[in-house]
Structures are given as structure tokens and as C-alpha cells.
Image (cartoon, rainbow, N blue to C red; front, side, top):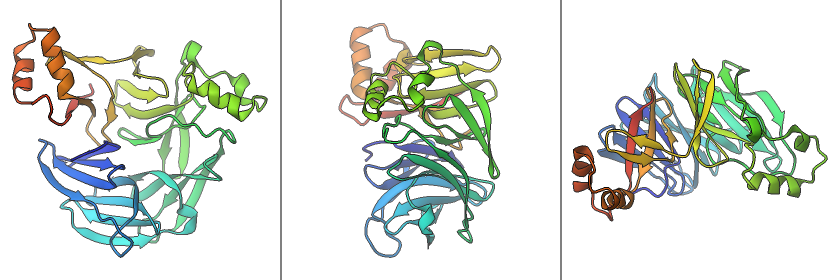
Length: 315
């Protein structure tokens, strides 16, 4: 059913899964039961050619789609019924990511061949567009970490390339909330002064020697979890003020390792992992003394079946 999970949002005991490769939104019960799919490919009314992003109006139980050709917002209720669509003004074009907060749409946009980024707040009723934050990034270096720069959980968080700061968006303001020190992996400031040719800087980024971007920030009262351009992910303890990097975590219930952490936007302190049945059956082969929960799990899953989505509490 799915090719790629681009984003997961959770509300009202439902999971809203964006698959950008399929240009579709899949909605499930939190038990895993598929409810319906939103996929209206075309050039006519109530249709779209390219789906950029989705967000939730959790107060009014609405799904908001940001789509292209023409650039517009489409709104559905949580039952999957189409409600309305509104064309966006040209200055809202090229939105990469969106979030909904305090009855306002927050859009992360790019312009000038993606060398500048800016943030718009959009009134979903009038579609009035207020560009209230603008930041030029390094010109001609078109390399981005894979993941989201806007994430919504405890706060609406924003990150950007070549910046170790995690920002909080509240109203029409953006404030620095955390600075993450990656020690020897910090991207050297000397590379950012304009003396290094763009192609050389791009090559430095691709070597993965340094962290040049923070993505997929998830926060609760005790911890921050996030990814970067480097493999694996980080967890920061607020109490201990300690940063640790992990290539994987152990699932203590089933006794195997998981990776590829996914955000659960709007979710209640939850994160998700994707696990392949092939991997699980391989674990059984190399660990014949696996526990009972694990053996019960793989007895229900064929080796050629679809991947499993495992949702975990982030305590």
C-alpha cells in the first residue's frame, strides 16, 4: 500500500501518513486498521498534481493539504470528506513544509533556487500572507539533510542548515530554545565565511564528517530526540545536559534492534520505527533463544510481508 512514509501525524486515535512518492495520504486507526486514502490526481477542481505536505487542525478535526498546480490548500475532515480548496497567492509558492498552530498555517518556503528560506504565517480563512522571518543561507550550496525542519510536538520547532540551534515558533516570532554542541562534529565556522568555493563546500558536506543540519526534532519534558545529516540519531537529556548518539536502539519487549526513527507530529510523546519482516526472521535464525513475545510476533508475519510500523512511547 505504501512506498515511503514521508510524514506521520497522530490525533484522535488516528494516524495520518503522507506518502509523497505516491502523492497520497493514508489514514489508519491507531490499531493499524486502514480507514481511507486521499489521492485525487488530476488538473481539475478538488484534484492536484503534486502533494507537498499535510498538517492537522486538531481543534476542528481537519486535514489540510498543501498541493501544487495551482498552488492551493485543500481541506478534509477526519472522515476523509472533501470540504473546500483555496488558491494561494504567488508569494506562498514553493512551500517545503507546513504546520498548523494557533489557528494559523506556518509555511517554510524556499526561493531563488532554494538558496534562501523564509517563514510565512497564513490565515486559512482570508489567506493573508505575512512573511515574518527571512534568512539567507549559503548561496549555491544545494545540499540538505534528509528530514523535516518544521516539527510539531511540545512546541513548533524549526531548524535550518549550518546552524546548531533549535528554534521555537510562537505567534509571529521565532526564538532560540536549544543550542546543540556536537563537539568535534560541529561544522567549522571557517567554512561559512565565503572563502570556500560552493562545490568544495558541497563535497565537505557529503563526506559526513560534520553535522550541518538538525532534522526531525521530537521533544518531551525530559528529552530531545533528533536526526542529522549523519547516520543514526541523537538523544539529549535535559536533566543531565548530556548528548548521546545512537546508531540503533534495542526494543526491550521483543529483544531486537531498531533504527530509522520517525517523528509522530501532534502525537502524545510517541515516536515510530520501521522494521522489515525479513530482518525479524533473520534475528530468529541467529538467535534461537528469542523471547516469547518475539516468537509470537514473527508467527503472525510472513517473511515477504510489508514492513511493520512500531509506535513507541517516548518517555
